Image 1 (tube, one colour):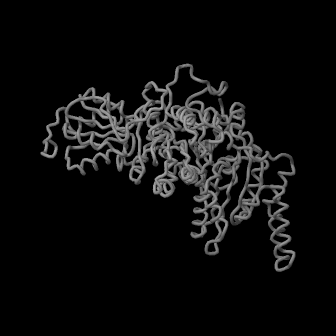
Image 2 (cartoon, rainbow, N blue to C red):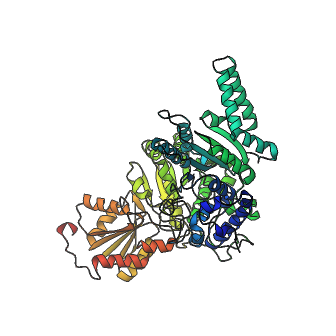
Image 3 (cartoon, rainbow, N blue to C red):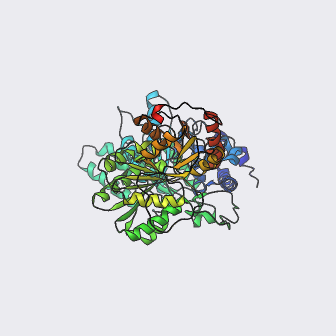
Length: 631
């Protein structure tokens, strides 16, 4: 396809030189280009198609990058990347060495704030707006946040803070609520556009302030204030944002450049906190995505835009997410106390079928990870058995609640941690590298690391039957293809198992790296233990392997620092055993985005990498001095 107008836009400055009449044509080309790009690389689709006009309007009206645009989550910034000098790099999107699927400060000066998780935009943009005031700079800051992200507490904490003066200063902040869930009927007709322009224009503001000055200190002032508030509230749902101290405008059609641009121009000229409510459609302009925004939220890989997503005819391996979803339904049938909780990840966490079959026991709390954990704690206090399905990376946001509300009270809450370890194309913001380290240090908390699909089902059953808090971590995608037993069998608590007997080297594996560890052990004739538990650790097995082998190697698809390997070292030290230990895992750095398998190999966690690391450290025939303590 050709994009004659889009190809002339290399920076937003080029965009701002266009006559306004050309912008709809540019938006059309931009939408086609984004669709064509995602079809070649995979990535988020519906959200990006929904922000095309908004992106064009923002870069047209605001003097970027001098004015700051802060995108919430950032999965809707592909149009932004195209317009800010990265058009030719879109073919590398989310690939190793290519551009990120999210904003990154090191990637472009137009990416003013690195994101990947939700509900941070207002806080960051408010910080930038206040910094500009303190530095005496004439600079605007804009936060673009979706209606889903507004369910998180941090968004309201930021609104509460941004709407009041600090030392007499108010930041020049615009919050744009991108409402794409159709929870509010789409605005239609000339009247709505007129009201939006009127309320954002100088006439409305001056008339409003003039009336205030005339009526102030008279009995009519409070009446007028309430009349304005409630009259405006009948037309627009903005009263709550006005109460936070923002001037509310909208809702307006976020795909209508004729309405959007004049409104943004009016708001850019205003001082203090402003709030613009726009309504957009996920997947706008692509009928397949408009019809099924959930399905077309993201493309896992390449597809034909003319045909849409097509299911592969090849038999697919069962994913760990599917294992969890099936286990959840089976356990719910057996135990009426089970309740399932998710912070806005029904599809991602595999809870669709559970929601259908057990609607009263299913709880989606929105993008509110902190609330999900304390909500689970409250249920556990009343004798229920909550299972919190949450991505490993998102549990980081509820760490305080996990410690204070669950662990200190030793409540039986199961945390099913999907996307543990490297996640691939989504990169560092979504990687679950740290959960072993940050959970095993919490008293009362247990940590299970199943090696495959069947053991994942067993680990979930084990965790559910335990009377205390437990995390069960499992990676994105499929495992080794192990057959899954239908029975709800539990694992022996705190016990590992020997999966291969060898000599000299003992490999202690935690999680799905068991299978590359077994492959490496075949080449080295090493012993392999599937440890299953990072906490409680099988101290007897660790000590026995250390006493009967010349070296210990720990392997985990998690960070080395503070991880399961560190637990093994602590155990050996406590027992006075000095057998050499090599720890293999994820390095002390944020791993880039890219193919999951390639990234694991880069980190030395494939079979060849494990073998080479062992040979490099101990040689083909390590001659190690054994102390009396080892005998």
